[in-house]
Every structure is written in C-alpha cells, then in structure tokens.
Image (cartoon, rainbow, N blue to C red; front, side, top):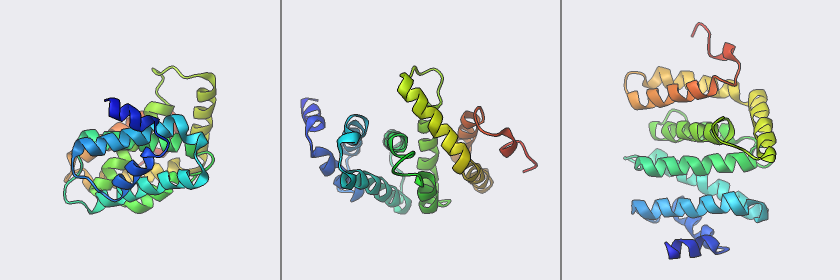
Length: 204
C-alpha cells in the first residue's frame, strides 16, 4: 500500500503504468488493476497539469489497451474491465468538451461489434452515467455545470450514434450473448431518463 501511494505521488510513474497497459507487459491481474489505479489517480488529480503530449499519451494508452482487448482470446476479469471503464469515463469527463470531442466515434470505430470491445464500451457508458448523470451523487456547483454541458453536447452530437449502436448490439447479441444484451439494456435504461425518448420508442 505504501508503495502504491508512493507511485501515485510520483510525477512520472503513471507513464510507466501507461506503457505497461498499452503494451500488455504484465499478465498478473493485480498489476493491471494497480496500473489502472495509478492512471486513474493522475487523471483525477493531475490532468490539468499535464502537458498536451502527456494528455495525448493517456488517450493513446486507452485506445491501445482497448485494441489489445479486441484481439484477446479471453476477456479481462470483470474487476479489471470495470476499472478500465472508470478510467475511460474519467478521461471522457475531463476531455470530451475540449480535447477529445470524438471520444465515442473513436471508440465505436475501433470496437465495431467485437464482443470484448462492446463489453468495455457499455461498461464505459455506465461509468459515464454514474459520474455525469447519477442523481444520488452530490456534485460541486462547477461539476454540476460541467455535467450539464457534457449532456447538452452529447445530445447535440452523439446520442443518435449511441442509440444506433445499442440497436446493433441488441440485434447482434440478443441470442448469442445474454450478458452483453443485459448490459446494453442496462445502459438504455440509464440513459433514457435524459435523452430524446423518440430515439428509443420507435418501431424498431
């Protein structure tokens, strides 16, 4: 634990962890989880102080890690996938409005309908909902304003694409992958409270 705290406090340890994740350097699940925790800490507390090159490195790390998942024979353990989704969501929150407006487009373009990729995508959407929409979480005024801006931007630019992806996922996996189907329906249920109902309630 002390070593973990030391790594979190280090200015450059996160880059070592980013490299480990992007290049799948470790097979130990706890090491992978640990690396995501270090990355999470830096995104949460130090993102604003990073250089543009370092911020770009975070984006590249996440996309490279996701690409590795698409080619993997076995998915990561659920606790790693959940932590990865949290890190994707945190990155989305701090970068979507300014640095990474094509967040969803990039992920959907990479993932397609690959089941391992779809799983991470859906978990990320649930993590975004938890951070941005969940009414049970008390937010500071600045966070509330930011979250409102994020939802407005999403409604304008990407919600129709997300809804279309949900239809495709449900059509593709409703028989073969009940876990993905349930996760997708969970996402729809979470998002339906703040998006245009006409996108969901139609003849399809």
